[in-house]
Image (cartoon, rainbow, N blue to C red; front, top):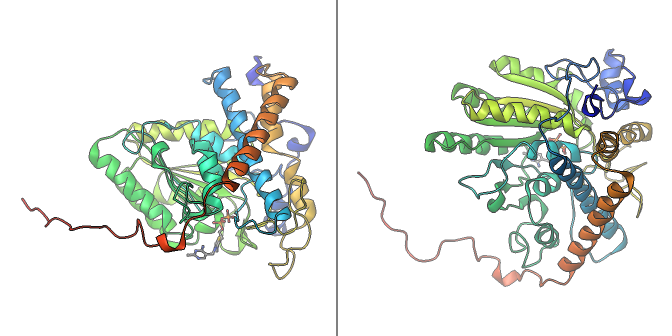
Length: 405
Ligand SMILES: Cc1ncc(C[n+]2csc(CCOP(=O)(O)OP(=O)(O)O)c2C)c(N)n1
């Protein structure tokens, strides 16, 4: 058995299986990071996947681990700022806990060449990880999050509107639902142009119950578009468990309705996410149509901001003043944090001898330093001016008459 045949995250903790009664639908699958559904094509517990990202070089694997650490430290740096600097204006829907999803997906994409060549990513109201994994400049991101004039969107957008076309990051989207429709239109444009690009749309478990989810998959299937729907099932939309809006345990089974490929992956395991994304990308580029990937994952902080969090400590625990009651048990948060995507990728690379402990520590230290410096740089940037608010909104000058024929 080669080094990479060893499963990166198999431990006593992860080998536990879950019970699946109605009660566990609400609590059980939420209650343990181990409880990953094995309903679809991709499964880890029974060894269906015999290899782990074997096509990747050591350099690419290290890049993935570095990306996970960079996302984590972007989040941790920002959470500390929000908690300790009363005048800080930025806010965030934190992605910590979900880093392996964006990292695994982007590792399977082309991330350079601008809007006409790169694969395109359409993000959500929780965009930081998607953006960093796609290659967005973190200093300009930090500036945008604090409404600075040198931010990605000149300080007009803030977190939920960041975009960077140069790397194919088409934008965050604060609306739950319509995003995938725009992304499908973009996939149609790619097909019409005859380009080999692929479109990834991210959505949460909260998007299943929207009409847009279904019209998107219906049209993407009918037109065989190069479209991948990555549904990050972190169990909750805001403060409601997904069982309140979704009649099945695995949302990926919805793919059957449309006759396309539906895949459930362990979203804490970057290599499993990568393998599924790579297959979906190959299918899309070959003209074989869309894929729905459901990544089972978890967010460590509350829906937005940092209620329940403490400076310097990972995760939010206890009562959330914004929710009427505490919406998730602390033991559930801790169970998921025991299967941390940072640890899983780090342990895998060490056991595969791609990294040693000292190098893994150095990567983490560099990521932390980079993010502290990025936010410090953002702090010194000029604020967006209110009087410039209408700039870049309306086209100036005259619009030429429409040409026919
Ligand atoms: C059309 C619309 N309705 C309601 C909201 C308020 N809202 C913001 S986030 C959210 C829940 C999203 O849940 P999910 O898609 O599971 O993503 P998660 O926050 O868990 O990452 C809701 C309802 C919104 N932004 N847009």
